[in-house]
Length: 326
Ligand code: F6P
Image (cartoon, rainbow, N blue to C red; front, side, top):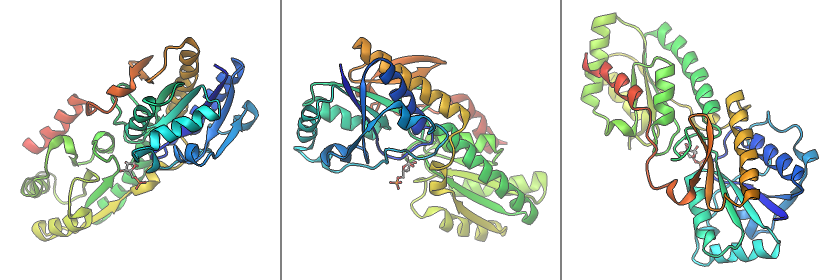
């Protein structure tokens, strides 16, 4: 193996740059040449890539976003897309491709694997922490802290005005970020897919119970995006009418994807980047995702990463729900 390529794909996640740095530094020490494709898998089709040496990545670990840019790639999903991409990788003499992204990006790797003769390895990078096979994904820890910073501030104004707040966090189909942000911010309620559909009557009852028990005060609901067809703002209006208490909606949105990665994300990214190269050199990493389970680096088949919905912490899920039952 002489030449490896790296790309970042799907929703960018803080810590992706630290992973790129670790990959490049470890690869260069092992005598490998590195290139980085730009804008995810699109960079392959567009032959848009840049050489990456240690000098290029010395001081990027603290930067949010990704120096390689990211994107979703429609061309890879076309019928002849994977074969075309593989052909270009062969022409560019890429012996291994490292993809930093989420399960959608790993599905792209699977499609590519039917045509590409080199090694393919995945590194989990998404704020959603929804990739099965690794306890945490790069970016989740930072996104959680960003959400908490916002929710703590919302608590101040919610307390001052004795209002209900609905705070919508990202997470696509997973409630990992919503539950974590809800627990850590001591939100009164969490709405996430793992609890099933939202029962608005139950929610109103709980707000009223809370008011009877603790008097007027703030009441924060942290909800995962995609929980409500009508959206947070419509629900806020509904709650305000039903409860007679002012209610505001706040959608945190893409600020959760940005910002300097926290230490935990930089460390995870560095560990997984270095481990990916070591495993590639040993020939063990093809069609594997490198991950971490209980603090130990591990390999997990890429084909399995999207099969199961990653479970959110069942203990915290149950504990948070007991608040409904008082
Ligand atoms: O997967 C990361 C993520 O931020 C999800 O939480 C969110 O649903 C999605 O990406 C948003 O995607 P886009 O930036 O394309 O709107």
